Image 1 (cartoon, rainbow over the protein chains, first blue to last red):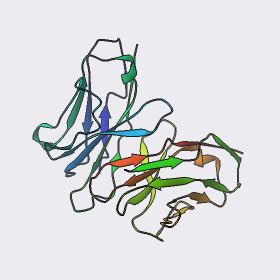
Image 2 (image 1 turned 60 degrees about the vertical axis):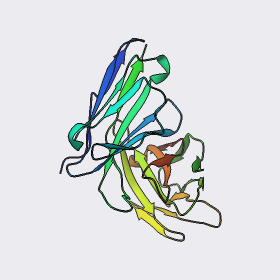
Image 3 (image 1 turned 30 degrees about the vertical axis):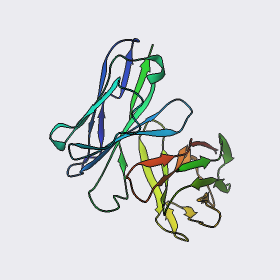
Length: 115
Length: 112
Protein backbone atom coordinates (compact mmCIF):
# COMPACT_ATOMS: atom_id res chain seq x y z
CA UNK A 1 0.00 0.00 0.00
CA UNK A 2 1.39 3.38 -1.02
CA UNK A 3 2.02 5.90 1.72
CA UNK A 4 1.28 9.60 1.78
CA UNK A 5 3.03 11.35 -1.08
CA UNK A 6 3.82 15.00 -1.51
CA UNK A 7 4.93 17.05 -4.47
CA UNK A 8 7.24 18.79 -5.01
CA UNK A 9 9.88 17.65 -2.56
CA UNK A 10 11.59 21.05 -2.73
CA UNK A 11 10.57 24.45 -4.01
CA UNK A 12 12.57 27.66 -4.19
CA UNK A 13 10.62 30.77 -5.15
CA UNK A 14 10.95 34.51 -4.87
CA UNK A 15 8.90 36.66 -2.57
CA UNK A 16 5.62 37.58 -4.21
CA UNK A 17 5.40 34.47 -6.34
CA UNK A 18 2.81 31.72 -6.05
CA UNK A 19 3.48 28.12 -5.06
CA UNK A 20 1.12 25.16 -4.98
CA UNK A 21 1.89 22.10 -2.90
CA UNK A 22 0.16 18.81 -3.46
CA UNK A 23 -0.61 15.92 -1.13
CA UNK A 24 -1.93 12.48 -2.03
CA UNK A 25 -3.17 10.69 1.09
CA UNK A 26 -3.30 6.97 1.65
CA UNK A 27 -6.15 5.55 -0.39
CA UNK A 28 -9.37 5.41 1.59
CA UNK A 29 -8.26 7.83 4.29
CA UNK A 30 -11.00 10.39 4.88
CA UNK A 31 -8.92 12.63 7.12
CA UNK A 32 -6.21 14.82 5.66
CA UNK A 33 -4.08 17.27 7.60
CA UNK A 34 -1.57 19.96 6.71
CA UNK A 35 1.21 20.96 9.10
CA UNK A 36 4.21 23.26 8.83
CA UNK A 37 7.57 23.37 10.54
CA UNK A 38 9.46 26.62 10.43
CA UNK A 39 13.21 26.18 10.97
CA UNK A 40 14.00 24.98 14.49
CA UNK A 41 10.49 25.37 15.79
CA UNK A 42 7.67 22.99 16.51
CA UNK A 43 5.50 21.43 13.85
CA UNK A 44 2.30 23.46 13.73
CA UNK A 45 -1.12 22.42 12.54
CA UNK A 46 -2.59 24.29 9.58
CA UNK A 47 -5.87 22.59 8.75
CA UNK A 48 -7.88 19.37 8.68
CA UNK A 49 -10.13 18.00 5.95
CA UNK A 50 -12.71 15.32 6.39
CA UNK A 51 -13.29 14.12 2.86
CA UNK A 52 -13.74 17.35 0.90
CA UNK A 53 -14.91 19.49 3.84
CA UNK A 54 -12.72 21.68 6.01
CA UNK A 55 -13.19 20.39 9.55
CA UNK A 56 -10.76 22.76 11.23
CA UNK A 57 -8.80 25.55 9.59
CA UNK A 58 -7.89 27.42 12.74
CA UNK A 59 -4.17 27.02 12.10
CA UNK A 60 -4.09 28.76 8.72
CA UNK A 61 -1.83 31.80 9.26
CA UNK A 62 -3.60 34.25 6.95
CA UNK A 63 -5.60 34.58 3.76
CA UNK A 64 -2.54 34.11 1.56
CA UNK A 65 -2.96 30.38 2.19
CA UNK A 66 -5.68 28.46 0.37
CA UNK A 67 -6.25 24.74 0.76
CA UNK A 68 -8.55 22.59 -1.30
CA UNK A 69 -9.51 18.96 -1.46
CA UNK A 70 -11.82 18.58 -4.42
CA UNK A 71 -13.51 15.20 -4.57
CA UNK A 72 -12.11 14.19 -1.22
CA UNK A 73 -8.94 12.67 -2.65
CA UNK A 74 -5.75 14.68 -3.07
CA UNK A 75 -5.29 18.13 -1.59
CA UNK A 76 -3.49 21.27 -2.65
CA UNK A 77 -2.12 24.10 -0.55
CA UNK A 78 -1.52 27.34 -2.41
CA UNK A 79 0.49 30.23 -1.06
CA UNK A 80 -0.15 33.48 -2.91
CA UNK A 81 1.77 35.74 -2.70
CA UNK A 82 4.58 34.03 -0.84
CA UNK A 83 6.46 35.90 1.89
CA UNK A 84 9.86 35.19 3.44
CA UNK A 85 8.30 33.88 6.66
CA UNK A 86 6.47 31.17 4.71
CA UNK A 87 9.72 29.24 4.34
CA UNK A 88 9.70 25.88 6.07
CA UNK A 89 8.73 22.27 5.64
CA UNK A 90 5.10 21.55 4.85
CA UNK A 91 3.87 18.14 5.93
CA UNK A 92 0.72 16.37 4.95
CA UNK A 93 -0.78 13.53 6.96
CA UNK A 94 -3.79 11.28 6.59
CA UNK A 95 -5.76 8.97 8.83
CA UNK A 96 -8.71 6.66 8.66
CA UNK A 97 -12.24 7.62 9.60
CA UNK A 98 -13.52 6.70 13.02
CA UNK A 99 -14.17 8.17 16.43
CA UNK A 100 -10.54 8.45 17.44
CA UNK A 101 -8.62 8.62 14.17
CA UNK A 102 -5.60 7.66 16.21
CA UNK A 103 -2.71 7.25 13.87
CA UNK A 104 -1.78 9.93 11.39
CA UNK A 105 0.55 8.85 8.60
CA UNK A 106 2.86 11.56 7.35
CA UNK A 107 4.33 12.29 3.98
CA UNK A 108 7.99 13.22 3.42
CA UNK A 109 7.22 16.94 3.37
CA UNK A 110 7.78 19.76 0.90
CA UNK A 111 10.70 22.04 1.71
CA UNK A 112 9.76 25.57 0.69
CA UNK A 113 12.30 28.36 0.55
CA UNK A 114 11.13 31.89 -0.21
CA UNK A 115 13.91 34.27 -1.22
CA UNK B 1 -5.12 24.70 25.95
CA UNK B 2 -2.96 21.91 24.59
CA UNK B 3 0.81 22.13 24.38
CA UNK B 4 3.92 19.97 24.44
CA UNK B 5 7.28 20.86 25.95
CA UNK B 6 10.18 18.77 24.79
CA UNK B 7 13.76 18.52 25.91
CA UNK B 8 16.04 20.82 23.96
CA UNK B 9 18.66 19.23 21.80
CA UNK B 10 20.90 18.32 20.28
CA UNK B 11 21.66 15.11 22.13
CA UNK B 12 24.90 13.31 21.30
CA UNK B 13 25.56 9.79 22.60
CA UNK B 14 27.93 6.94 22.05
CA UNK B 15 26.59 3.67 20.73
CA UNK B 16 25.04 1.47 23.44
CA UNK B 17 24.43 4.43 25.77
CA UNK B 18 21.11 4.92 27.55
CA UNK B 19 18.74 7.49 26.07
CA UNK B 20 16.10 9.64 27.71
CA UNK B 21 14.28 12.44 25.93
CA UNK B 22 11.94 14.32 28.24
CA UNK B 23 8.45 15.35 27.19
CA UNK B 24 5.78 17.03 29.29
CA UNK B 25 2.38 18.18 28.20
CA UNK B 26 -0.55 20.41 29.06
CA UNK B 27 -3.94 19.25 27.90
CA UNK B 28 -7.63 19.48 28.55
CA UNK B 29 -9.51 16.22 28.74
CA UNK B 30 -7.82 12.91 28.06
CA UNK B 31 -5.24 13.20 25.30
CA UNK B 32 -3.45 10.47 23.40
CA UNK B 33 0.33 10.78 23.33
CA UNK B 34 2.77 9.98 20.54
CA UNK B 35 6.41 9.90 19.65
CA UNK B 36 7.27 10.46 15.99
CA UNK B 37 10.73 10.09 14.45
CA UNK B 38 12.18 11.73 11.36
CA UNK B 39 15.23 10.02 9.88
CA UNK B 40 17.50 12.09 7.63
CA UNK B 41 15.85 12.82 4.29
CA UNK B 42 12.58 11.13 5.25
CA UNK B 43 9.16 12.07 6.56
CA UNK B 44 7.73 11.62 10.03
CA UNK B 45 7.12 8.07 11.17
CA UNK B 46 5.07 7.03 14.16
CA UNK B 47 7.42 5.43 16.67
CA UNK B 48 5.02 4.62 19.50
CA UNK B 49 1.85 5.81 21.16
CA UNK B 50 -0.22 5.56 24.34
CA UNK B 51 -3.89 6.36 24.59
CA UNK B 52 -4.58 6.38 28.32
CA UNK B 53 -2.86 6.91 31.64
CA UNK B 54 -0.30 4.27 32.66
CA UNK B 55 -0.18 2.81 29.14
CA UNK B 56 3.31 2.02 27.90
CA UNK B 57 4.05 2.38 24.23
CA UNK B 58 7.00 0.47 22.81
CA UNK B 59 8.66 -0.12 19.47
CA UNK B 60 12.18 -0.88 18.18
CA UNK B 61 13.53 -0.94 21.74
CA UNK B 62 12.07 2.48 22.57
CA UNK B 63 9.56 2.88 25.39
CA UNK B 64 7.44 5.66 26.85
CA UNK B 65 4.90 5.57 29.67
CA UNK B 66 1.88 7.88 29.85
CA UNK B 67 2.13 9.48 33.30
CA UNK B 68 -0.94 11.53 34.08
CA UNK B 69 0.22 12.51 37.57
CA UNK B 70 3.37 14.15 36.18
CA UNK B 71 1.88 14.96 32.74
CA UNK B 72 4.88 13.33 31.12
CA UNK B 73 5.68 10.91 28.29
CA UNK B 74 9.46 10.52 28.35
CA UNK B 75 11.12 8.48 25.62
CA UNK B 76 13.74 5.90 26.68
CA UNK B 77 15.97 3.34 25.08
CA UNK B 78 18.42 1.18 26.92
CA UNK B 79 21.09 0.91 24.24
CA UNK B 80 21.10 3.26 21.27
CA UNK B 81 22.54 2.46 17.86
CA UNK B 82 24.01 4.66 15.16
CA UNK B 83 20.88 3.98 13.12
CA UNK B 84 18.78 5.72 15.81
CA UNK B 85 20.25 9.07 14.79
CA UNK B 86 17.21 11.18 13.88
CA UNK B 87 14.92 13.94 15.10
CA UNK B 88 12.35 12.83 17.67
CA UNK B 89 9.04 14.65 18.16
CA UNK B 90 6.67 14.29 21.07
CA UNK B 91 3.02 15.00 20.23
CA UNK B 92 -0.43 14.88 21.70
CA UNK B 93 -3.87 14.56 20.25
CA UNK B 94 -6.64 16.13 22.25
CA UNK B 95 -9.78 14.30 23.11
CA UNK B 96 -11.94 16.05 20.55
CA UNK B 97 -10.31 17.39 17.39
CA UNK B 98 -7.99 15.30 15.25
CA UNK B 99 -5.09 17.75 15.13
CA UNK B 100 -1.75 16.93 16.72
CA UNK B 101 0.23 19.30 18.93
CA UNK B 102 3.98 18.83 18.62
CA UNK B 103 7.04 19.67 20.64
CA UNK B 104 10.03 21.34 18.98
CA UNK B 105 11.85 18.11 18.24
CA UNK B 106 15.09 16.73 19.64
CA UNK B 107 17.99 15.96 17.34
CA UNK B 108 19.76 12.76 18.41
CA UNK B 109 23.19 11.84 17.06
CA UNK B 110 24.73 8.51 17.97
CA UNK B 111 28.46 7.97 17.36
CA UNK B 112 30.03 4.55 16.88
